[in-house]
Length: 268
Image 1 (cartoon, one colour):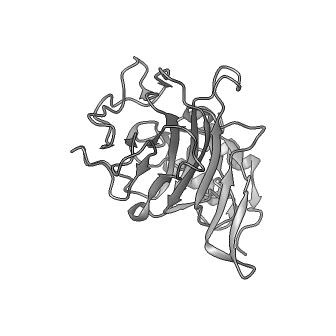
Image 2: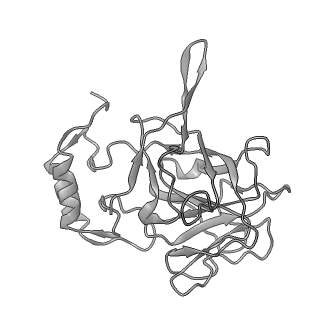
């Protein structure tokens, strides 16, 4: 299953009429709620070589079908040393949040309930976990960023938690299950509302089928798929898995053929 793309850019920071290089914001589409798991995550796509600074969205609760208590996004972390994600202040985020990152395989990296300085909002700071697990984003590539309300934590196929939070303010590594996320613990007190996630070190995903980075989807990208053939690694990016099934295979070559040609809007 391919990730649902999204290019809903809701604003660009400007000074004296000129777009500032730090980049635009991105808004969750009103008609396309972000899913809660990797197979339904929204890919944040946009202009080439453009930094992303903020993600705006909402958790709608039971107003969204079976329930909207978690959102997950596929993002491109371009600068792991600078990566961070921080929930905006309470005037823009209206509920008790949690933040999480996952490898492309779905295995956990870091998570946080409450900001170490206090309060109900969350942060994934530069430098990674502080609970002794020593986990962090280390390689540029595609990762999942997720938001949930308090007490709705990621779990594996057996229902075991992926992160064990000894305190609400710790920056947690995956000290629970080492398996990929397949569901969330149901919230005991559902948290819903609007949110803003400020990010650093993140760029829009641009023309993901251009694996070689030459501005075209062509035979060079087929060669890249062949070179990465097989199951995705448990940790780290898996860029050649274009259809998101956690395996680099013939279906990914079909994606390249479907998107064959010059990347629209890319650098000349």
